[in-house]
Length: 71
Length: 220
Image (cartoon, rainbow over all chains, first blue to last red; front, side, top):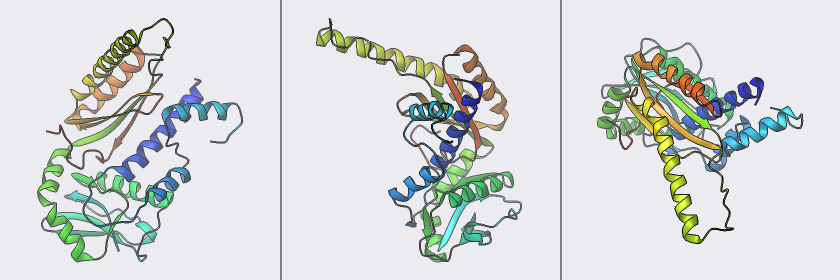
């Protein structure tokens, strides 16, 4: 993996870690749940965070470097 | 509706940034706890990537201005002040313990990317029993390696959590690290990278203590 690819991968992982924390961690006081599973998926998609796996991230990076996808 | 960003300890001042939907941030005191909230006009606040990032950004700003924060999970809202007050009172002992646990600490995330051991043997030439013994040995070896990877970081942490990695990911962990250990933690990451050039090691943070804002099994 080139340095550029590593940099992009790290950025993606950082964004994934951030969204995971905000949506799935944190203190939960009772209250009304306002997020459905579909909403959560939309947020991940909107942020272009690849939820599936790190392997998918790597595949995406390969696709980007091959010029077949945009980051 | 009321949107909660976090429970804070000794907040110096509110950051001069708008909350969700542009609403002003508000500093509340309920039963001795400090909270930062904003009001949202909609019954169900819009869920968008912008809102998620705004929430995260405000929590970070609050962490920089207080002695401790317990970030709230995004996606819950309170109908009115009474509902918020009741929720705080109900969780008061846990909030007290959690504030004490995270005070003076930063959270780091660690992901190690690499291939899981491949199934090289297939079924040819192996009995079912041989196959199972081989896989068991591989699993034990992998668990031993992961424990070796994890332990140096746990020694520098007040609390830690390991998560099941997705495929292609060997390891995922989160660590609650006292501020004075942060440099040593980063040095451990560099050592891990240097000693294992075949692995991609991604350390993220410092984060507000999202993972450790709630009581988890194994916490001190």
